Every structure is written in structure tokens, then in C-alpha cells.
Length: 149
Image (cartoon, rainbow, N blue to C red; front, top):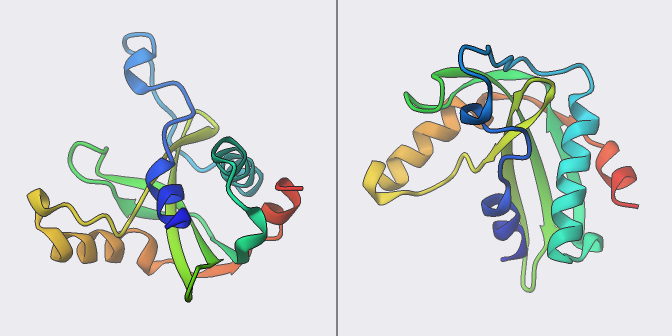
């Protein structure tokens, strides 16, 4: 349950698009230091929520890719995704969180498995995962444990 809150709790940390000067262009490219930015973002979420960091058994991060963020989310956007395997009460569970970027910072965290009945429920969630984090390759993410120390 704790990890579910992590996925839902990811939110915008950069300046919202609407707060930018009129006519200003938002750079949505994945910055070169994306691994460190995402690690700091997740470490801050864990600290703010006072979650037990020792329950993270495995962390992985994807290479930058492109994901369909929806018509209102900017269409195809550069993304990076993180998979965390967390020790649960009865079983270990793996959760995925995706990230977009704005002007060299983490822009938004999203749950690619979000099951919203109003947008098609489980089918829409499967399509969203397949068009975002589900198609990316993952590698170890040693920056996360380092950022959580």
C-alpha cells in the first residue's frame, strides 16, 4: 500500500506550464542528469511521507523514451520510468512511476497503470502502460539508494 501512495503522490515539482510567461516555450527534453533528478524526487517523496526506505528491495530506471501522455498531456512526450520492488506485508510488489520533464527539472510523475473507469478502466490502463513505461528497457538505479542515505 505504501508504494501505491508513492505512485499516486508523485506530483509536479517544476513550475506549472500555466505559470510561465505568455508565449514562453517549455522545454520537455530529458536532461542529461535525469537519473539524479529522479532519484532526488523519489527520495524527497519518501522523506516527506516518512516511508520506510529499507523496504525498497530493488530499484530500476529506464533509458529516456517517448510516451503518449494523452491529448491534454501534450501528446507524445519524452519520459523516464522507474520500477521499485517493495517488501509488502505478505508479498513483495513491483510498482512503476513515470516522469516527464520541464525546463531541465522533473515536471510530473504519473502512474502508467492508473485505472480510471471514466477513461476506459483496465483497458485504458493497459493501453497507457503499453504506450509509456511498458515499452521501455530498465537497468539498475544505484542513484536512488545513494540519494536516500
